[in-house]
Length: 405
Ligand code: APR
Ligand code: PHB
Image (cartoon, rainbow, N blue to C red; front, side, top):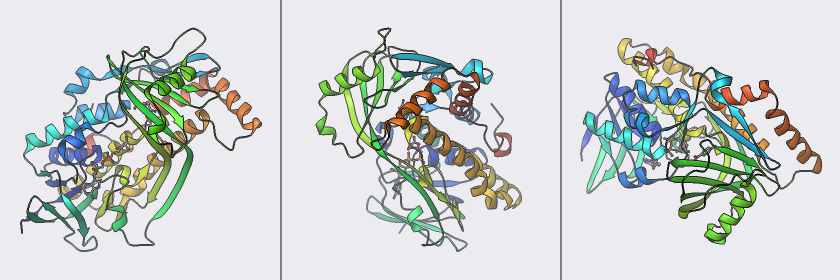
């Protein structure tokens, strides 16, 4: 049975696991990454695509931003649309020049896999029966099957970066975690279409028939979403029905509408807010979706994963450089501050822009007034803008061994 030793065993090769592995590598800390899906699946999986300014800066500081710089679409604002009119929110003006970048999460993952392969540190795809044990011993262990061989990796620490449905969080004994959760009574039907984006910036629409979002992936690919019931079967939606509903919700009085094109991918995602704390149990540290989920309305999921692993990398760097455990002990508290602020923002964006099945006529009028206030008050727009481009990281890049943006 192949036995291996490493410093940090990482379960999951999504953005959290891969970026953590890279930040540790920069600090000379060894890791083994174990992923249960294939490389192709991880790279092709369609996910969100909005990077906060701080996430872009982090990827550059970590030396994995070259393609992002070439291909990422920098947006200095967005539109909020309701009652047939689009209202611009100018991030650059309201935040002193900050912006977001549209770059698919799968492209981030592709860049991080390339960086990992260059380091020659271990990265296993297609691992079967992944399990962790010994979190409260000095050598927590990851076991898995790869090809015909059983593997055992002895670690100093395990990082649970295996997403919401992974095995790390459920490996923590009952009674340790407190779970905070809100499930929304709607989901998003998302499509990728071969159509040139008809706007340079995202358009979030509140419509009588429900929320809709205009986004993009490239100068030739549009990404669109519709609010639908959470358990809506995608088979209920022909391509024609999707376009009819998208255009109905998104077309504004001035004639703006998304360009229509061939739909290359479509799916329905339910929406929830979820936090499990503490994000550490003995020698297991949870990061990213393994510890928290946000509804996608504020586009915070990937960005939170990046800020968690920055905090974790700083703590591990400090431990390996001088044996100090202070930041490992503080990991969960430091992350939770930013996580809860992003939870609050994502819940607010979601509540403000969706129609709820149990809303009253009062709620509906209040929501319109919310949107009217949001799009006419500089203070309200500034609040949205500073949260959308991303609140400051809790730790500096320098403290995590990076040379700064
Ligand atoms: N063993 C090994 N790997 C696993 C296991 C397991 N038992 N279970 C899940 N994984 C892998 C998944 O296949 C996935 O590649 O863990 C990875 C987790 O990645 P993500 O789900 O992408 O989560 P994370 O890295 O935390 O990224 C945060 O931001 O945009 C949001 O929700 C979106 O993925 C998102 C994220
Ligand atoms: C996306 O482009 O996939 C996207 C953009 C903004 C969001 C969510 C998803 O709020």
